[in-house]
Amino acid sequence: MKSTNALTSETIKKISALKQEPNWMLEFRLKSLDKFNKLSNPTFGPEIKIDFSDINYYKKVIEEIKNDWNELPNNIKSTFDEIGLPQAEKKYLAGVHAQCESETVYHNMLQEIKEKNIIFCDTDTALKKYPDLFKQYFNNLVKYDENKYTALNGAVWSGGTFIYIPPNTTLDRPLQSYFRINTKNMGQFERTIIIVDEGSDLHYMEGCTAPTYTSDALHAAVVEIYVKKNAKCRYTTIQNWSSDVYNLVTKRAIVDENGLMEWIDGNIGSKVNMKYPSCILNGKNAKGNCISIAIANKSQFQDTGAKMIHLAPNTQSSIISKSIALKGGTSNYRGTVKISKKANNSSANVKCDTIIIDKHSKSDTIPKNIVDNKTSYIEHEATVSKIDEEKLFYLMSRGLSEDKARELLMMGFIERFREELPMEYAVELNALLKNYF
Image (tube, rainbow, N blue to C red):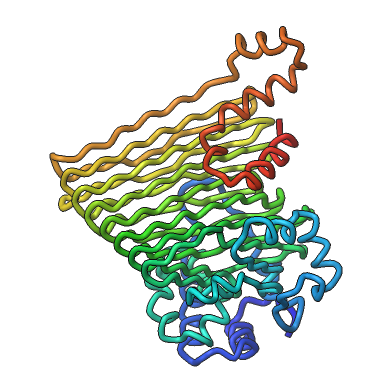
């Protein structure tokens, strides 16, 4: 079976059989499908108009995963050549995973990573090679029945990244995954699981693109991250989906004692984007940070933000959100910070800044901040503004065109986000944003 559009129990059985999965996974998929059919779309945020009968739920483009770029079919290889992934792999990455449509097409990592007993593979392979570890963490942090799209992912998930970093292990270079949708009406439903064991450190980077078609595509991923005691994980994403993609993603991390989780989240593309990276601060002195940008261009609806849930004493969180709305786009911040009764002496800081470029664009800040004890506090600051006309005039008086001056001001506005990116990603981001401003 190369591809399928019908979302039925028979389709689920065929996908599971093709993947040669154990019975418990087939049962899980069928249970998820039943829940998907019963759940409605979210009652908040942008309107979701997806014809699920038009979505292609599974497509396999090659028979086996390659570890040599030259062995990939020319049409796939050229796609990754265009974005510079082979060059990035040689220069600054410890390992690369690339997925096209429903399955991983390329995977490779440095020998030194293997020698450290790090597990870095696609999630389908992890199910087969590490069944006990997989089952321990799969569907443990993000449950299949949380919403319509976690249920959909549970039913038809395919591909994604599985990483396990052993205790007291540090990587000098990041691991990276790249996800590509190449087909009209395609659905991509990867499942990513990352475990950073005690005292270890991981930087994981993720990129996403798709060409533009006249009909809708769907990306509904699930990410589960486990940051153990004294461990650190940084998850950097630049999503540049095309303007026909619904990007409906659930990302969550649980952080143990003295652990640190950092989300660096860039949202540039997609027709509708609903994504709120979350941290559950489960151990004392745990920390969670999220720095994000969202750019809403014509006909785009960016509904983004973050969630920080404090469950233990002396926990800290920070959310910095930068958004830009232009040419009639809508960019909203939607976030939740909750400090529970047991999370004494905890603190949270939320800062949301938005620039609206023209009278046709929109932006709202929709926070939910809850403190359930008397020794903790939340600080929240939000600003909505237009481009500073005096600064614009000054730059133009120095010889810049109005477009170039506006671009320079916008780049300065998101500088805090760009500072957190590796140099190669910052260069890529600059090139992408110049097409917007």
